[in-house]
Amino acid sequence: MALKHLSITSALRLVWRSFFVQVLWNYKTMQGAGFLFAVFPFLRRISDNPDEHSQLVRRSSGFMNTHPALSSFAMGAMLRRMADEKEFAQEEWQNWRESLCGPLGITGDALVWDGLKPLVFMMAFALWFFVGVPAAILLLSLVIFLLYNGPLFIFRLWGARQGWQRGKDILRAIELPFFIQSRKWMERVGASLAGLCVIVGFVFASDFQLVSIVQFGIGFLILWLSVRANWPLISSLVITVALVPLSAWLIRLLISGGL
Amino acid sequence: MAGWVALFGAIVYLDTTAAFQFMLCQPLIACPIFGMIVGRPEIGIFFGLIFQLLWLRALPVGAARFPEGNLGAVVATALAATIPPGLDGQASWLILTLAALAGLLTAGIGRHLTPTVRYLLKFFAESYEKALLNGKRARGGFVFLAAIAVNVTAGALFTLALYFLSFKAMSGLLDVSSQVPLASGLAAQTDALWNGLFPALIGAGVGVVFARFARRRMMGWTVGGFAVAMGVLLWL
Image (tube, rainbow over all chains, first blue to last red; front, side, top):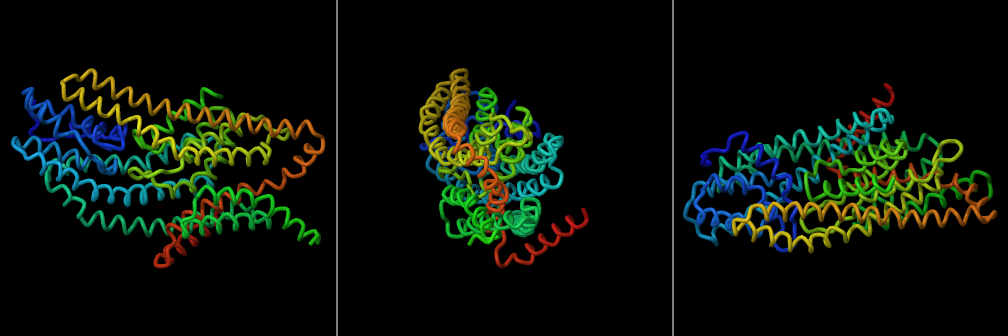
């Protein structure tokens, strides 16, 4: 059946295959082979003529790299262009593909890696302190899984449809106010959750014991400075761990009047 | 235990960058489930909580090298769960600290794992594209599955290797302290000194997210978060 429109079933299939876009990630073509994997079943529906099919495979391979969660945008757009344009200029095609990498990549990094993911896991962190009993492990894991993957799956599906509808102009989709507004709100919610995590972490981890309060403060300060000054994370953590017995010993010595 | 370590290493590694990215790899999901499976849920929850926020700063973006904090969390949980609890049913703080350090070491060494795998995958990607260009779909499918197998094997072997090496080092250290009376006495006395590991690393994790999100222009929202947390805590 020729690919005239991207049905919901086809979009779901494209989204499912987009989950494997990084399996073949390498330093030469990056996600290129993963993109080919995702769109390959649809190429036969665009043309089953062996020569044309081979041409479509060639068009679908080569360098490509974007955010995995936004890869469905590019995949939908690529399929639309391949279905619509029988004739194409290789250079223009490759330039267009590469022009998608930066904007989709940056948008995905900001929205997902630096937005949705920390937000969900800050929420999960607080949730674990409130209801984190061993009996609730599976339930809490399921809640976190759904909180993160539910919206992202719908987003990927929407992206595939947008890609198909907009074709060459797919980058217009990420200019929608939704993207700017969600970034703004994620910053706000992130700031609130950061405040919430400080209080929750402090109360549950320190248990209002002097030594624990100091140790919480040491960990907080070292890593806060480490992030702000861009120090290596692991060295900062090793220093924090090394300071744990030292600070405990010093405080006890102070309390007992040994100093 | 080794089987579970390998299985979790494989799943966590695959989910971190190569496929799905469902975030099952995150310490707060992977560690408690691992702990539950091996019969030490409290250890899993402990490491899930202390490691979760720390790695939120490390973004697996493009070709960037990032610490394998998720694998580190699995190694730490497995190590602490392997060593039987004391008579009071609690894990020793010294063991938890050593396991946490092994987790950090795993994360640090793990920075080189993904780039190495990705160099190897270049040949698979070329072979995959070539197979499809020549119309050999079955061969393409086989190469793709082989690439998944490479990722799975890399994750499993790396986690297993770091688990065994850390376990050898840890048991060596603990055996020495139990054989020498002076060192043994010292270990028992100092164990209490390590119980600050939990507040210190929770503080560290909170410090990471606070530095990232609580900017000056967002202070109102952060204070709002403080207020909500205090309200909920007072209500509870």
